[in-house]
Image (cartoon, rainbow, N blue to C red; front, side):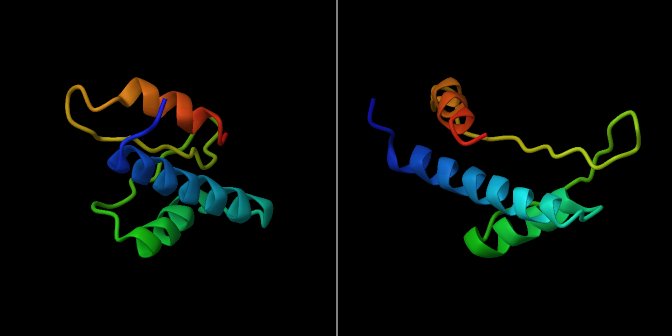
Length: 85
């Protein structure tokens, strides 16, 4: 199935975040998620700010959400994003 342009953009943005996250995690960065968000935000001029989260052990917990309109293909996008994890 061919993705629409805005869906392709979402996949590119999430992929950039995940790649930056992997780089920061590999260097044992304690704030890998936030720094990865800053990298992706600078690259794509993303709106909003990152809200750091921690897991039950107090370690950095990477999170993100995708926002598209109703009927915009969030389930399809989720399957495409899973290919990059």
